[in-house]
Image (tube, rainbow, N blue to C red; front, side):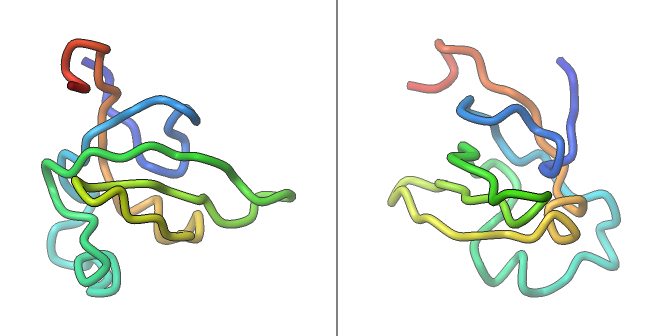
Length: 85
């Protein structure tokens, strides 16, 4: 299973957060928004010119915009169709 950071994760596919690139230094904003390990997500869109990622995540299907600098902190992997049920 290939691991990505969220900033380079394929768009329009479901993934799951596996952790952070630096467990100690992760910005509290990421945790406070609910981007926690074992959370499923999908990158819906990216703003032009390397702008923020528009992400849908969690059971409630929350949606947020996340800067690429913040997305680099989040490790994840892609879910198969069977896993995304």
